[in-house]
Amino acid sequence: MSFSTIVIGGGVAGLSAAWALVRRGERVLVLDGRSAAPRASLAAAGMLAPSFELGPDEIPPTASVSPVEKALGDFSRQSLAQWPEFAAELEEVADTSIDLQSGGILGIAFDGRDLDQLRLRYRAMADVGAKVELLSADEVRAAAPGISPAIVGGLFAAGEGQVDPVRVIDALTNAITRFGGRIVTGIVTAVQHSGAGVEVMLASEPAPVLADRAIIATGARNLTLKSLRGEAALPAPVRPVKGEAMALSLSALAGPLPFVVRAPGAYLCPKADGRVVVGATQLEDRHNISVDQKAVDGLRAHAEKVAPCLEGIAECGRWAGLRPGTPDNAPILGPAFAHDRRIIYALGGYRNGVLLAPAMAQLAADGANSSDIHWPEAFAPARFAVPKTLARAVG
Ligand SMILES: Cc1cc2nc3c(=O)[nH]c(=O)nc-3n(C[C@H](O)[C@H](O)[C@H](O)COP(=O)(O)OP(=O)(O)OC[C@H]3O[C@@H](n4cnc5c(N)ncnc54)[C@H](O)[C@@H]3O)c2cc1C
Image 1 (tube, rainbow, N blue to C red):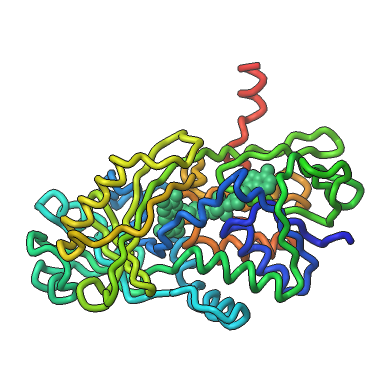
Image 2 (image 1 turned 180 degrees about the vertical axis):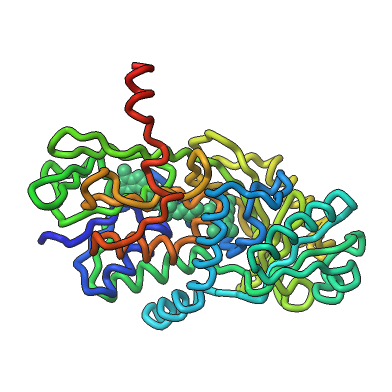
């Protein structure tokens, strides 16, 4: 059987693109490396938090954001707006809940320095039209009684929230299969142009799998791409950025901790099943998903400082995943070859791959079907290509 599209990678980026395509009646095959290349998507906390992800948490955001950050902010809010419909359709077809919570996200401050950072973030987000509000310590405590009395203020982003990413992956898997898509375990070794379509080589099969086109959604992993004429693929410089997280088992959360709380050192995501996911560390260039026990103990200590009601609560898991980062930490979206749209990149969700999934999937699916699509320039793979004159000078 030949396929219209082969999606390589069964994380949230690949499955969301596959879901968009099967709904349009396409014959889709998803090839996923599973345990040989674990999915970051299963390690995510699932926050949909554009207002808190404008810049790295460690650096106070400034009003003067770069063009790529501006494009990423706009794209993040666009994707946030797509989540309710994306979730409703998925839940209906998969007949399961993905725990979408849109009740807002609260950032808190323990001292004047934290508060200054929240105020800067507030200004930057209010400037781009986000529904953000600065709260006094009393207002924070009234909204979330489980939060420490030591806090001095907060920033509330209405309409932002979270999903349960494990449920999202299960629901996507289920929905794609119900619509006739196939999801198969296998490591892809290369993808190349062939005739009018593409050939996908698997480590386990001597013969290639054929399709009209391919979407590359391999997360933090690189893949070899070849054109028939020897043309080089545009670069897709992804890198792994390890993140560790944990979960505590607290039931009846609606009272003390009714929504996601972000604080210096940790964020707390109360899930519908009674878990509170606490994250996350951030380590560059680690290729394994082993857990540093001390670092995760540190997350727990931060979480207990934020919400003293968590002290003594049983832990129900700790884990790690590799976020797909890029040099500017914005996605890589668009055709992999300058003049040919048969192979499309859908990579680089970095810290926000779950948030960005609906918007990335829509673009990838539109781009697979039509040449008449406007790929955002800020996310074009060409931005990482070395100009020919410079390459000649260096070479
Ligand atoms: C601790 C932590 C917390 C996070 N929290 C959030 C959050 O709150 N909100 C948010 O939006 N994002 C969050 N993220 C980021 C988010 O998880 C990622 O951006 C997102 O999951 C990336 O999805 P993906 O599909 O691109 O990659 P992945 O989920 O990694 O999927 C890529 C898939 O490609 C497959 N693959 C790779 N190479 C091959 C190959 N050669 N052949 C076949 N298959 C291959 C792999 O097996 C894998 O299954 C978090 C990440 C971590 C680690």
